[in-house]
Length: 148
Image (cartoon, rainbow, N blue to C red; front, side, top):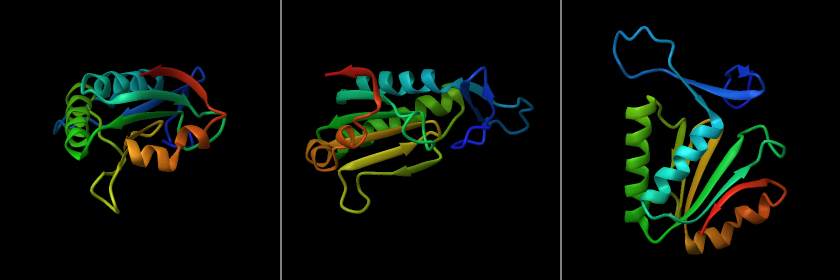
């Protein structure tokens, strides 16, 4: 079992199981590899013009997630557009929703966090990203991908 999701591991690769939104659907859910999910999130936020995107493999540093996706946005409007597009695409295509969300408007703003189990998205305004310096805090993590 995976500590963060309660999902079983398949050949050493964490697999997330999400229930479908369809009423009466008898499928067990959609299987999605955490690496594929992380890359899909990167693709979506890049399409919406997030900047300085970093995909970190934090699996050796913590059991709460396998990947962190970090990105910068210019303002709250851009972050909300990215959040809405991300949620719509993942809900429609993958039949999944975030486990938890903390958005830019809450508690001072500047940081949107969307927890997808093994993948946690962090979108920041530039000032907030510098202040919290997650790359520095997680400097031992393996950088899988960086898009400037």
